Image (cartoon, rainbow, N blue to C red; front, top):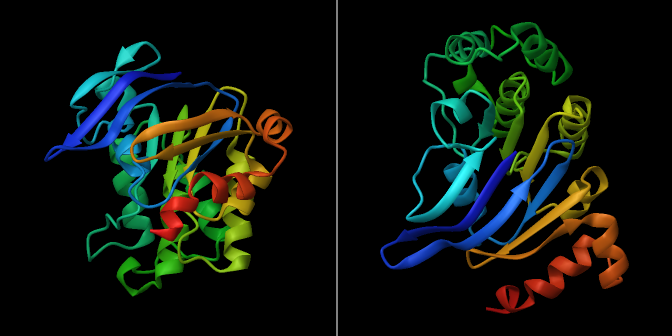
Length: 233
């Protein structure tokens, strides 16, 4: 589905993504792990076609990242992307105009599940409510690859469970999810593949069950082991 080889993104002499080679396949939920500055968001933005790599190759379904991939990849950034005047209905109409795979009925169902109303003005929402709306917009695109960057940030426990449940319901045999979060335990319960990045490099990638068996620990324990030097810095 998504494949990259020796992918590099350099900013002012610093490699935000540094020689990453990997593939993502349909039918999986990938948890993308790493502390701030590890390259997770930069990688997602490259895959979404928002920024161009400095070198290396990245393709989606064997085609270069571009108009084709943007029609099949849904991406939710950490940043807010709404105009001040927008209600949730305005945001849905905006997505429907841009993306053929956007399902307005599904979007409305997600909003109802998240206790949000189409008539609510987004600028009046709390950060947690806005985060839920962003997830609803992204999941309502019936995309082949769905990338969510920190979808659980600023979310209370109940809303967190709602979002994770919505992601589970959206998973199909022919699509894939790439989700970043610092809440390792929550992601581990719903994911089947793990991707660890550190200083822009790919440290470890594989099936969670296989990694547990090989390393003798869960993903939270492995996270602490891999990034201990970062925590102490």
